[in-house]
Each structure stands twice: as structure tokens, then as C-alpha cells.
Length: 216
Image (cartoon, rainbow, N blue to C red):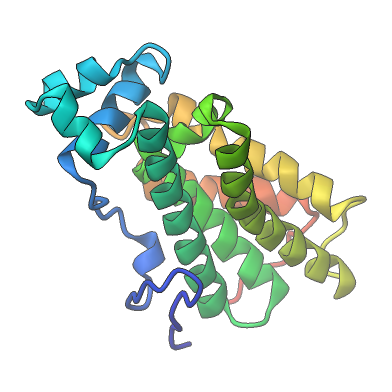
């Protein structure tokens, strides 16, 4: 099936691009801040730490970002926008079959967490945001949650899934997938990101009661 564009994010991508592990285009300041936040946490990082590693002065850094929270907010916005675009493309390529849509969605999310774990791990720092900034991010985050919940609900309606609550099952699966950022390491690990994603698809299928034979 031909791919469509991820309209909401404005990102144009070829078919299957949601499976790629492309490097995100971040400025030196954002890339460095992401690395430091990942290594020692948001509160363990100072603006001076970021500026020093980038090789700029603190005033120069403030020219681009108002404060450390603004840097985190920018990172979160880029990450969630990327996730949404990839999920929308994965769903589009799956067509209308609820099982195929579910498999693609879980695979997409697991691949993102494994291949972009530093960016994905920024979600754990949302408590550092101001209430207003957290609210804006949460609106985007709920779009992903809704995609998962709606996909499960459609599977229940068509009789291919068997769950008590689509929304609670979706939250449980998202929590499982998000935890990939805590332990997965692509270098020297037992599994590649692709192998890991397919195992998570299998776990997710069992969770929603879907175990029909796959069509060749």
C-alpha cells in the first residue's frame, strides 16, 4: 500500500521511513543539552555546563534559548513531533485492518524508543517544565495515547481484540514501550532495535488477545 504524508507535522517521508533510525537534526546547543540531560538529568545540568561543552559563552547560549527550561521544551517538542509523524505514517501504511494498524503502531513506537532513546528519554524530565509548558506538551503526548487507544478500540469493535479497557490497556503498553529507553543499548546487546521491536509487537499482540496466524 502506498504511503501518505504525516499531515499534522508537515513531514514528508518515503514509504517505510518510520522504521528508519535517522539522526535527528538538532543544533549543537540542543544536541549537547540532550546528551547532558540524558547523562546526569535536567537538574544535574547547568546552563554553564551546556555552554562549556558546546564551546560558546553563556550569553551566546541565551541568545538562542531563553533559559534551560526553554531548551528542554524545544527538545520535547521535536521528539514528540517526530513520534507523531512516524506513528501517523505507520498507521497510514497499514491500511484499515485493526490488527495491522496495531502491529505497525507498536513496532513504530518501540523502534523510536530504541533508536532515539536519548530524545525519547527526555519525556521523563517533563516535571521540570512550568505548568503552562507541561500542558502544551501533554496535549501532544495525548495524541499518541489516543492513537493507541483508538486502534485497540477498533480491534475490540471488530472482534479481533479482547480487552476490558482499551484506554488502560493502551497506557500499560505505552509504559512498557517507554521503558525501553531505560535499559536498551544498541552496542553489544543481544538484540538489534528491529528484533526488539518485533518482540514487543508479539508481547502487545498477546496483551490484546490477538494471536491469529500471520498472512504471508
